[in-house]
Length: 161
Length: 217
Image 1 (cartoon, each protein chain N blue to C red):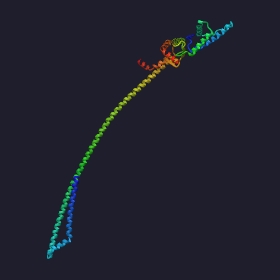
Image 2 (cartoon, one colour; image 1 turned 180 degrees about the vertical axis):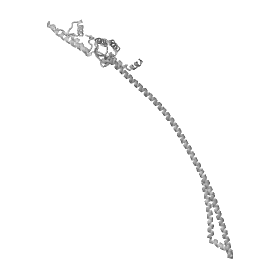
Image 3 (cartoon, helix red, strand yellow; image 1 turned 180 degrees about the horizontal axis):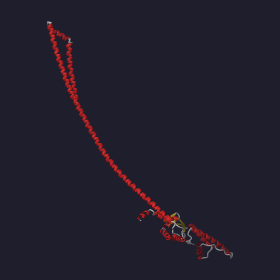
Image 4 (cartoon, chains in turn brown, orange; image 1 turned 90 degrees about the horizontal axis):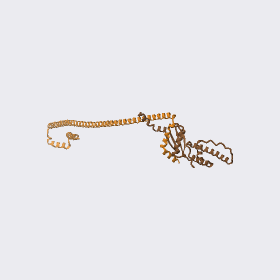
């Protein structure tokens, strides 16, 4: 079984939240299964799920009916992703908007690995661009870095004005 | 050396002659006043034939002899005086000549020494002047060389200082511009406009990112 994480589940924190939601849902699902078995008609209200969790559960239900075993598999896979998936951190000049997040996560999962986890931070001193952390690797493609690197050219540019 | 030797020989000969003359005169005088007993006897013997001469004759003969002896003695004295005077005069003349020669020689030697000293002094002065000229030339050359070196060093220092000032100015200017940009832009970041740029950057550096992740794994 393979699960493609939704793009709005970007970071490890998002994944943890998703796992907790699925766990809650699995607990509720187990209770409801027991009630069905013992013919108890009272049905409790299902926990409110996020769109991501809902999408994930619907995807798993699409081929065959949802079972507790399947939910356990999903949880196990998600925990495995949480522990083993590569993590990339983008530091931007401002808090990342949803579009930016989706765009960058989509790129990472298409070009690097499908279940790559992406964290977002912001630092206004970057001015623009981004700083990418891959474990111990840091790629600084910020505007600030470019300005500081090319500051030796400022006098030359000013002289040519 | 030759004149001195001649003078010494001449003086020694003169002293010898004068000594001989004085000795002869003294001997005659001594023989006259103190006759030898043999001579007295011989005289007596010779006179003995004439012993019969009268007293007046004898006295007359004695007187004549005395006069004759006195005459001879006077003449000898005169001759001796004349000889002494002549010798003295010649000696004076010779001494004067020798003195003059000595003085002339000494003067000549003195003049030669003076000339030699003058030439030596001139040589020394000439050498000193040459040395001074050479030293002056050397000093002048060294001074010019030093001046050129100092000028070059000064130019180099000025050039370095100018470059340093320009570099400092550029650095301060760059810092000012960078500070201006960072201060101005950091509150006006529009990430929405950077979306395409960010994706392009990722595409450009895709290989580096994948390599970084592989390295981490």
